[in-house]
Length: 243
Image 1 (cartoon, rainbow, N blue to C red):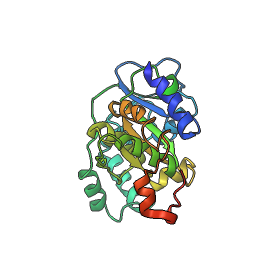
Image 2: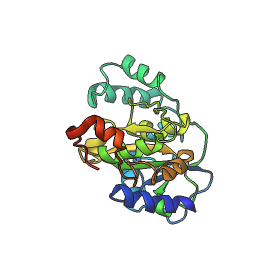
Image 3: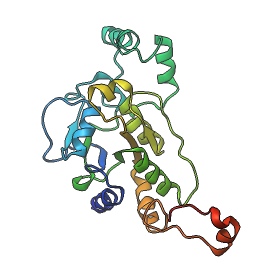
Image 4: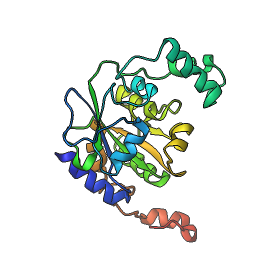
């Protein structure tokens, strides 16, 4: 299970608090999962700290999260009306239901019917090969992850920054195959007491090997900055960059 080795290496390199998080869409549950109802944004915090969670349409505590992760249909009827009213008049995250509709229509659609379980667990003890690896980190750690991920391509990720925390952290990178950065939605940040400096970087698993391979080669990893003589001669005494 090489992803467990990835977890140890990246946790040490980046100074992460807790483990990177594995997210796997599966037809079977993982062993040792905790029971009860779960909010997706809460489950990610718990997994970082060691919990294994088998999220299903039956134990998902958030109707929006159930839909965004593809475990159930978008709320309709009275529930749909209540959700729209809450978004506009309660959360006040959208100025109108038309704005909410636009945001949902222009973003990646949920992977409806893909699997019965969304297994969320610490990467360092994940039982299944991850579809995504999520890093709950600060801005500098995010910078290092993105630099390592683009070291061998120079291609910027196509990010999607509007929507719910679970959409930005799981749905979009899963469906698109793109690395994404999520600042979470403001309600999730408040309700689940995320620190002001925390954000998510979500990495599709197929990008992980490249990140690991870049560590000894890139200064965002363990490589040291070097200054060729030509560069030193050009800048002279102005050279103040820390090696």
